Length: 164
Image (cartoon, rainbow, N blue to C red):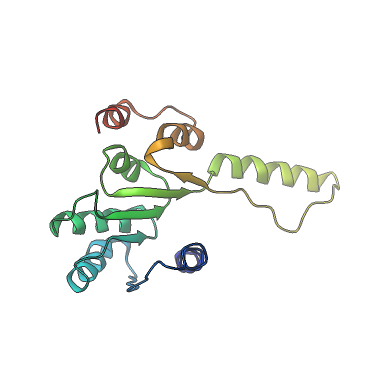
């Protein structure tokens, strides 16, 4: 699944931003190797302006590598998929996580249950049903958090949003 996410991410970036220069792709077979992969990229490309971390653990490894290499969040951005507490906190603190694409697990569950119920009563359904992802940035972090988790953004993150 992660490889498909990566392929989709690269395809979309090339299509939407044709002037964007992809200088390297550094994969790993262990999510805990995100820092190591990012450090290798930063050693080889010290002027790199950002990276894509396939999900939160590799993305946070990249954030650690950026800190170690003296990068500043204003000059180095990380985007990832999967919206969890650690990347939400990093984003709220106005640190390296600049963008997140997230699934909508609750909405997906409701959609799947509805489709299953409709199928049981013989209703016709499309061959493929999709729930669109949510784009998360600092500007909509609190709103997105509540939409995905169905609870308000934790107070510590609210405070970080307000002070940074």
